[in-house]
Amino acid sequence: MKYCPDCGSSNIEFKIPADDNLKRHICADCSVIHYTNPNMVVGALCIKDNKILMAKRNIHPRKGYWTLPAGFMENAETLQAGALRETFEETMSEAEVKMPYTMFSLPHINQIHFFFLADLLDDNYGPTSESMEVKLFDESEIPWDELAFPTVKKTLEYYIQDKKDNNFSFREEDITIW
Image 1 (tube, rainbow, N blue to C red):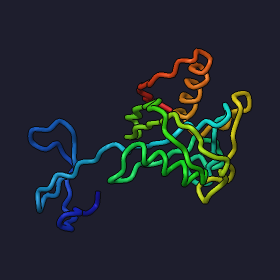
Image 2: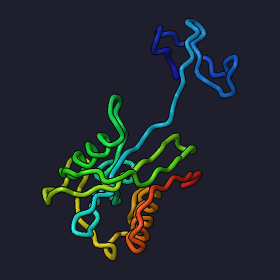
Image 3: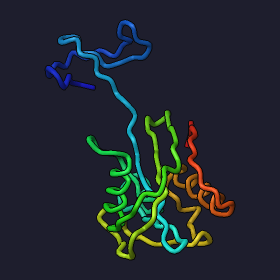
Image 4: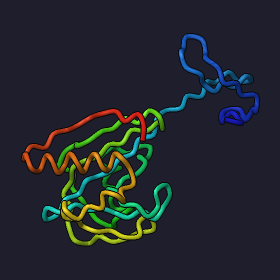
């Protein structure tokens, strides 16, 4: 942090405030402590006719790799609304959330990834400015070596296993390294 967003001062210190245990950016002029918090990534594993909707990224990071539709949650937005918005932004498709499905804490990059299991409502999917290709995949067609993120891979693996067992449950875990 170079400037205080409250007063504009460049007199910023990075130290542990009183009664705290982590270093924070503190404005030495107005004494405001600036906290940073993890970013929330929300998305959906959308299913239609036993196929999985995926998008090939047209943006960095991991441009050219396949992912489930997902992205950063916006302020004043619910988890479900964010997942559905991201699904539309990346695939031009509408979905309906069925259940919370996976949540991954990634403390090394200050992110939480949360995916819903959802039904794709129509066949009106296609690429957008954020995706160069959008496709429904059979399980056997998933491009495992071209997946963008470990959280997508784990979510897909859980789905395939749960489908075999016909028992879908919410999973939460930590991923400490990519």
